[in-house]
Image: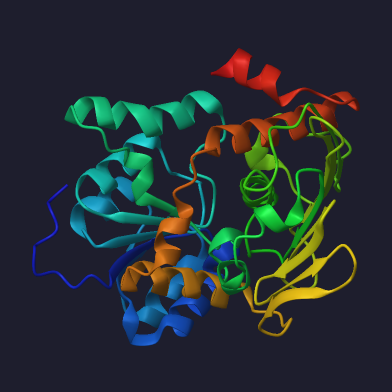
Length: 337
């Protein structure tokens, strides 16, 4: 892969998508306008991808390696994990490319460890390749979450955390929403003791891979002490919506993609920001991308030190859905690390 020329505009991007997400990619580009300039479009062969390339008047590839080699850019927008291998991500970030991914880049703990550790060892440095992968749209990078003041001290130690994330087909997979949910929850809660999850889907059998889950999933987790977590995620809803609700022994916090309120347990309003409105999925992606382009604090919000824990919780949800029993995420970490 050729190194990106030093004078290359930071807004240049290549696109890797599937047919299901092609419309979403087009909406993201429309939302960004001239801030981002696509160089090429690629993905597993599909008419929708060919149409997108034609609309953008850009070349089309069905091989991600070739796309990265022939069209080096400041960004790669990954809207699908199909056809993506770890070496593609290594190649991209080691040549100065930021990978903006709408899907989790690893679906098991060994793959995550390879992405975070191996490149650093090869360079003999301290930095992690995975730090150049930005998951979008991350709830912790949403306008509502970023506007909320640090609520940890106000909430108190004992907490019930509820998080809902639903969206339309093509606006993030069920796995992506589950991963984002656990990344969010683990900023407010410790690692659960057990997780009991149920998958509601068209297929009667629960898949063995997180990449293949679809429909809706609900999970109940027990926290150390008296805390609890309830998650509800779906990839086939009528509209995109994310809502975090934390009940602490001292305060109550509600956060959406656009606003928040913080009340004392007595009912007194402590803080609030912005109205509760819904932003389209593409606008959420565009907001985070602009933050990366502008190097605003939101760009650093993706640097999550507990991604392995979040992925372990996702794997535990899948296992629990298969066994129809509560499972221990710490056991997953011990077995698969």
